[in-house]
Picture (cartoon, one colour):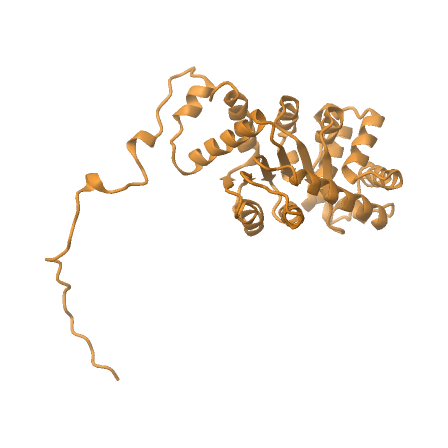
Length: 320
């Protein structure tokens, strides 16, 4: 047993100090928020945000989008289904028309919700209510028509995104103007869909073809990799996908680097209401290593952050 130590107060008489004025500090008065007057413009409000933490990250994201567009560099958006369910598709469609979207990538659930919006003007069933009586995922049009579109696409040598976009456009769906994939199709913007087998409600229907789904989604992965190869000086945004799209993006980056294609100056942005492992590592951190690029995490609700980012980027073109 070691010798017990005594109760002994530490001698503070020799503690060294320095002048506060000369200390580097992370929070400075000039970076603080400023109040705005009633009726102020959006630009005035945006400029009033503090240049600290999340507000400064938002500014960096806006600058990256505006700079990429101004220089003719690619801006690729990866969207999970929750983004569509929160009603921001019209904002994203407007960004497509304004040139802030070079390519669009969805997960499997994303294409389902986009399809239902186009066809019915509504989406997102009550899973708790539908699961008990065995009705979850059993909307006939969703299962039958999307699987039909995918099978046709496979026969025509299309990607899954192209196949569904073509199908909706040909049917003149009543709410097609709210469809991300239809807007992309009309504007000549590549749209790809990345599926994990068994995760989506259309896989529960007897009309689902694993061969067709796999073939069209694998083709979309290769299309997506080609868009990632053009991201030098550009921006990649992952919005609302916690697993599938971050993994897809990392594999595409790996292929691009395998071929010696530079991604210098790449900015990656993750937008979600939680910071999770795969988006943080596979989107924000790993892909920018050695590129001189920047990774940004914006934490908050899609229905707030995406319209806010869009409005700031639009204003940014006139000198925000």
